[in-house]
Picture (spheres, rainbow, N blue to C red):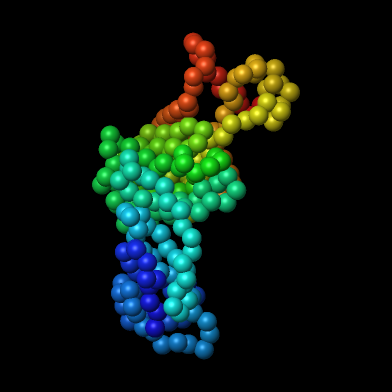
Length: 231
């Protein structure tokens, strides 16, 4: 018998991660199964304060610490894991539908700006595809600024994703990280940003639609914006 952890969460369903068993009711917080000779690992999915995530459990269940950021102007909670400077978003189908229904102005926004030192956000291909089908643009808010893909770009990029996820990266670049040729084009005090979209660690460099970058700026006016390519 397996029981969902007794915490302030709304239980969703059980998923069998390993072991060949049939649960009596995957949607019940308490379920039963016939224990085989080998080990069994279950995953308990639940919702918390409008968010959704999963915790791995075996037998009575153990809680994995989870972190949450907001989506759809704070109307939806989305859970994530952080590894280094990369944030991996957990957006199950139910959360995707909730974000779509609660998004305003035709934009599904994911706010990762409060995650310290985060420079990239990884989201499921299924979520990106669903946002495109719903005619939504997607905005990822990060500590350095925000990246917005309009709906054409969302569909174009989702169609190029190899594997299960796509990553959007926005990070500051220190002058010493530039090539000698690039350094000649950059003046002291210039802000240099590296903006990338990855799938399976490969860059998606061509797509239809538009990419909009917004960053905070309180320096002198007017402002000139330049594209500094890898060469």
